Amino acid sequence: MDPLDSLKKFIKGGEFFHNPSPPLLYSHAIQFERHPSVIADSGAIIAHSGEKTGRSPADKRIVRDPKSEADIWWGSVNVELAPHTFQINRERALDFLNTRERIYVVDGYAGWDLGFRVKIRVVCSRPYHALFMTNLMIRPNPQELEAFAQPDFVIYNAGEFPANKYTTYMTSNTSVDVNLDAGEMVILGTEYAGEMKRGIFTMMNYIMPKAGVISMHCAANESAEGEVSLFFGLSGTGKTTLSTDPKRRLIGDDEHGWTELGIFNIEGGCYAKCLHLSEETEAQIVHAIRFGTVLENVVYDPVTHAVDFEDSSITENTRAAYPIQFNDNAKIPCIGGHPNNIFFLSCDAFGVLPPVSKLTPAQASYYFISGYTAKVAGSEMGVGEPQATFSACYGAAFLVWSPLKYAELLAQRIQQNQTQVWLLNTGWFGGASGDGERIKVEQTRAIVDSIHSGALVQAPTLIDPCFGLSVPTTCAGVPDSLLIPGNSWHDKTAYKNQALCLANLFQNNFKKFADKCRPEVVSAGPKV
Image (tube, rainbow, N blue to C red; front, side, top):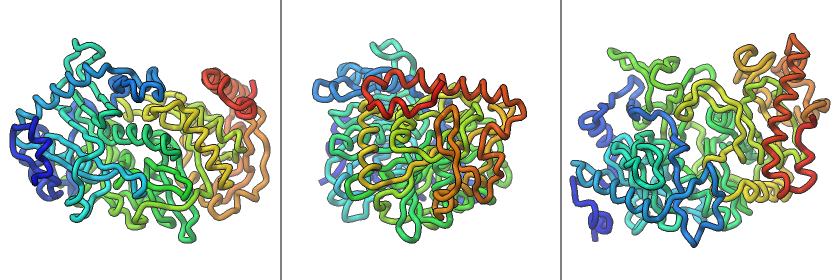
């Protein structure tokens, strides 16, 4: 029996390529893409996503269905879509796919924990998209493919074709629609491959909490002794960079679940930012960029095909997508025990948060719910300069339930396992963005190393008068003046004003959660 029989009932167009090999996808991407791909000098393939070079969160929709509507955190993150409109967009996507000469179907898994594994199918017309998802999903072996049968979640990617902006609920030519109850996703009007990755994460963010598992927008690694660390943060805050540590085994760089037994990676690959990538600071990522890797929207020399990782003329959101096995120190299978340390990464554009702070359990809940950082230029359409923002759970754009559900699950896991939580500022010091300096990756690595070694746990601390944070006053490899933010500012009055400004932003943001939080969590925020 043809495993694609059900799909071929409504896609009767061109030739099907089911789970095509990377070499075949290379060949098709070079020959048939509307924006022809090229091979970089490293052996990676360079692809372009067209007009959209980042996610389009304003165009994301969730189908309102009686079975799930009471669970959904409706609002600006999860904008409702009527089932009938979803069917219109689905039909529009299928009509487009029926006009294509070649249809690529990629089957894979989300979730390395076999107890929470989900079968995913991607249907698309761009070979670059097929290779991207081949890299980002967990690849089934031949026996698993033979038993794959029907998927749990299907993505219909017709991103080359626009949505009809005059259709009810549509606001532009782009629409990214998720139907949780039907287990389907439809993409129209954007060819940015990251939308598929995030669609799967959205689905997992819905089903895992129902099973008592917290889904997390974080990276994870493990020491040789089995000690696990998690790194939470939005794009550009350092999750991939800090978790890809040559001294530790990489479990995953972006999406994880935490069960009663430990953690597991949701994905089968990594999606690393490439701007300013260098051998000196991120050797593991550089070595992973080879044959099979997708380089997205990078600039290259037309003669040598050498990539210029400093060139952001197409976008600052240049990316590399590769199987996690391309990391020399990847841990396969990508699972681990309960975390010993959790790091919340904030790219502070105000330049007033300490580079490292030790959080109490109440503070951990407060800062997790707040999710303060700065949107990094290029990670979303329309973001040019860093912008201060609060993204609940360090990933509000991908949440489905209320942030408080994820925060409650995380607090339970932290308490049960006595996990220590740290707040790291990977942003600015000595001034706000534009005036101060960005904290060096090497300095943040030194902080993380000191925590892993246990040295920073024993370091003397003082309490930040505004934020109430316990701040270490000494750390190997980091100047003492950098650890206490006010000491690195020449204008002390300006520093106090900036700190007060950010503290007010925290308080104003938290008002929408305060009435549903425990009193000790509400009082764990900054004092004005």
